[in-house]
Image (tube, rainbow, N blue to C red; front, side, top):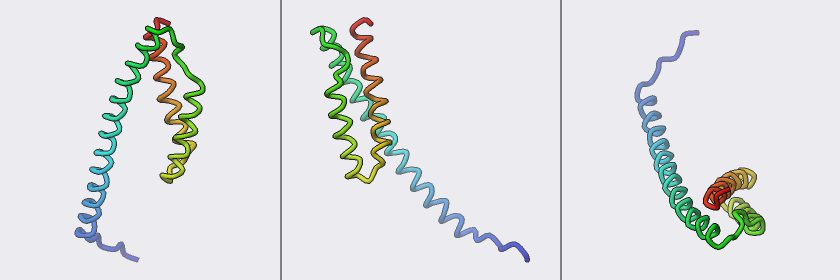
Length: 105
């Protein structure tokens, strides 16, 4: 059995499709980074406020309700809720770390 010849047009079209997917992924990644940057700018202000008003850096009740809310949003968006919880937990833990730093811990 001889190898089938490669169709250069099929390969070129495939590469264009892949490039298009990757361009969309790159745009989404950039948007995520900008959104996270904005989120952390706001949570930095929250941390400074909490430090000034002697509030604790963590709010377990708020965190639990946010996680539950975002798990439901993930389900509605056909995103794995376990992944969404891990992601938001990572973000929340980082925010709390920044709040502790703002408090001088």
